[in-house]
Amino acid sequence: MLLKVDNVSVSYGAVEALKAVSLAVSGAEIVAVLGANGAGKTTLLKAISGLVPIKSGSILYDGQKLHELPAHVIARLGVVHIPEGRKVFATLTVEENLNLGGYGCAKEEVQKAKARVFQLFPVLKERRRQLAGTLSGGEQQMLAIGRGLMRSPKLMLLDEPSLGLAPLLVDQVFATILQINKDGVPILLVEQNARKALSIANQAYILEVGRIVLAGAARELAADERVRQAYLGGVTYERRLRAKESRATGNTPDPRG
Ligand SMILES: Nc1ncnc2c1ncn2[C@@H]1O[C@H](COP(=O)(O)OP(=O)(O)O)[C@@H](O)[C@H]1O
Ligand SMILES: [Mg+2]
Image 1 (cartoon, rainbow, N blue to C red):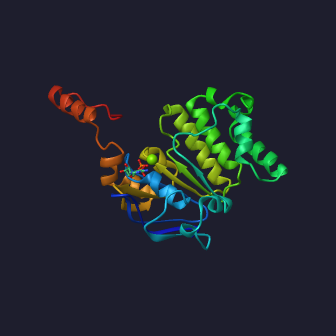
Image 2 (cartoon, helix red, strand yellow; image 1 turned 180 degrees about the vertical axis):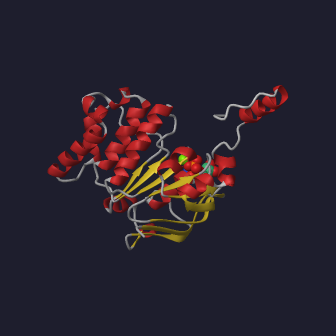
Image 3 (tube, rainbow, N blue to C red; image 1 turned 30 degrees about the vertical axis):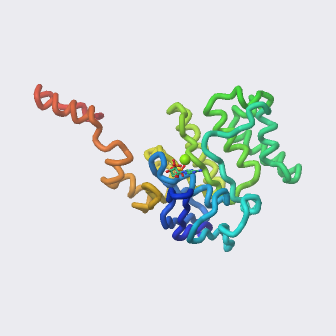
């Protein structure tokens, strides 16, 4: 296992945000952690990257105890955290944002990584001299991911990349995440968009108020009735209503729902 989170608890004062959470990421996969707002997803990623202290448990990465290391050392080990809310430097250009992502790396490495980012996100290449603050939400998310890629991650932690994006852009961002993983980067992805996350993940965990309540292969979770009801919409209200109407009128319901 590349990453092993074992029985980790985190508290903010009296608020217990994570309660004995355990999960693992192997060297090649996308692991999704699904949960509603406030479930503890961001706290989990912050605990791994050293931004919040853990109260108990352990976090092992490539043989190292991350929970004993400061955030800048964890970052240098190749653990790249893309925070929620697409935090790009609005008053810097796209290219300057990318260069900052590669800060401290060798010049040739920065050039190579940038070429790769521009290949993954052609729109960032087109807009390289544009101020990041003028990009659309989807483009800013791409830039935030691109900036993380400048450090040649060995493990990428992605916090709700789809939040607030239009459906078409969500598809684009998820397709890129899949591509980055295919290029060899293991990914721990936390998301409220369960349907999308399960469609690209290998393994998945469900986090409810600080606790893992369900875990398994993403494909199995997508078919699990409890997951479908709570996270995939289950049978929608409109669909039930239409079925009821059609029973009353004798028409067969549209199978597409
Ligand atoms: N800095 C903080 N101080 C106090 N409570 C916090 C802080 N950050 C998060 N929390 C609380 O911890 C819980 C988990 O939050 P968070 O990890 O942000 O969840 P998620 O990312 O799943 O929405 C929530 O109850 C939230 O209110
Ligand atoms: Mg969050």
